[in-house]
Image 1 (tube, rainbow, N blue to C red):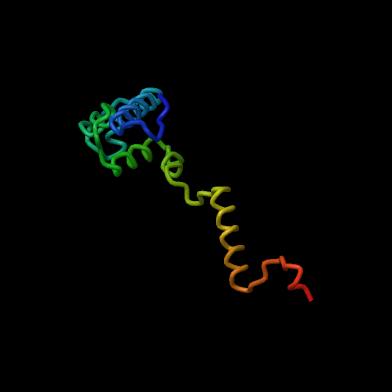
Image 2 (cartoon, rainbow, N blue to C red):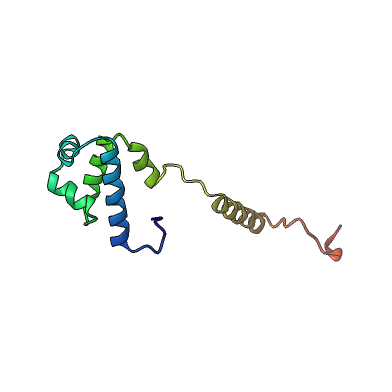
Length: 113
């Protein structure tokens, strides 16, 4: 299932829990083993894998235990670059500069020296 902007939160949690369980199984870990490595309770891990609400701190511990810190960084990248935002910022800077110094680069015929 692809998670999109309009996907309801319970469906997102269920999908993430399913993905976590899949990764855990692919690595040959039992729930008890992963919970111990992550420093969380087995009941907490079961709730997360079942798609029930959980704390972000528990997810962080699990992802670290699975050596998936890249997934943590992908949530909110440190340097989130947006070409559209850069273009808007440049246009705003140009407009401010034009208003400030009055040099719009265009002169009517009767304003030319």
